[in-house]
Picture (cartoon, rainbow, N blue to C red):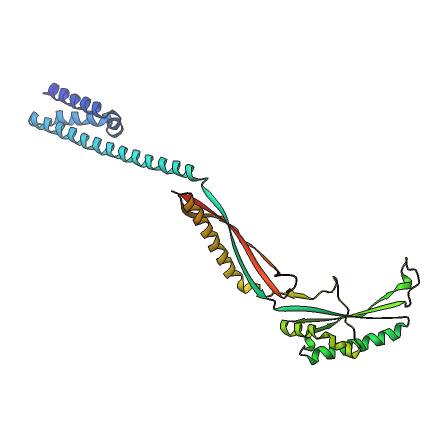
Length: 294
């Protein structure tokens, strides 16, 4: 009986090992089967019971083989899916569109700086200082009478130029000194200041001549409420960029995907034209890069 049991047991072992050698070796060490055979030899009973145990053991191994095969198949499916995703990402990584979004708006300046320049010439310096002081008082009275507040006025110290002190002076000038005075109006009442600028000729009736400030003292208009409109203009620029990208995607038979990169945008504030410097054109351009997909 021992020989019979040994023969049947080793036969089952060999059959199971041939069916799935790798799984069998990994999951069932040989020591287990040797112990099982020894246990069968020691037990009393019918040989058919021992054969039944061998068949049961073989069926268990087949079940484990099926589970192992299913796990391997599932692994291959997952591996294939990851490989496909990697290939798609590699193929689509350079499919991008770079577009610019523009937003513009015209606004009126909300701050004006008006330097009022007056000059006196002569040879008697104390007398010139007296004249320039009188001129400054007349200018300030005129401005405040027309609605300018005293806090909006800044009076600079007079500047004196001695023509004879110049190194290359020819000495033929009929006067020696030039005294320049500047009173600066800084106000948010832009429309009011523009009206006063248009009526500055009224000072001529009082003997005050306003000199053109030139490049050193120009009238300057500014727009200070820029921060309040910045978020809205940024949103408009991005929406315009998206429309452009969407049109590009449709023309290339693609679909617009996520944003790859974007910049904050550069704002600029310029005069609308040379004749209306008090009207400003606010402009922002933003650059957005989108990825494309099929």
